[in-house]
Length: 212
Image (cartoon, rainbow, N blue to C red; front, side):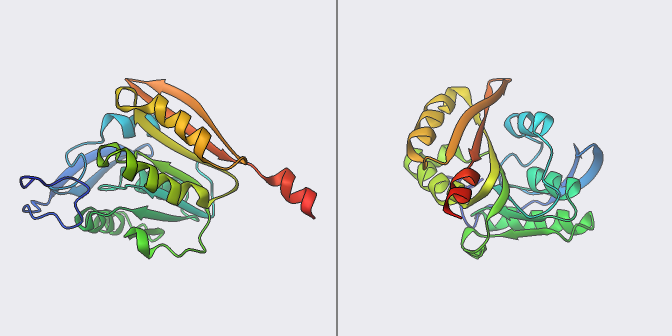
């Protein structure tokens, strides 16, 4: 990466250096494409692997969000498990989005929309959000990011966020519990290899019935 450049740079100035990547996702051995200047370009990073290895069943239909998609391990997994769902792979890094599109095309997956944050219609509510959020963008920016997307969970839906313990997973859990509306519940789902997976569940069905 160029000096001062990060994986959350919108348009990396470094050479892309597209190259092959062999990985196993959704129980399948895959040959994919990756590039320089994006998050964890040469492998599935440990945090994402912790999320993918033990995450619950993917909703079969509806809109699913991979927030901070990188080259697409989460988005591709969601799309492979739920071919009838619509997967939104969202990132600010345009090179990462291009790589996700290449990988989706190579696998024949037509249910992935790899887009910038502003390209997701405001009317979309998510049946699930899976994310290895970009902790290193800074606390204020991370809070803004989660405040933007988590309230878009549908009623009864869940978000699964994997966060490294020594990068503030416990304090993030407390902040989410205090910040989100009363119909959200935030719990620690499991821990592994120095990471926590936080579950954000949106309730509200009972309140909806009371208003009927």
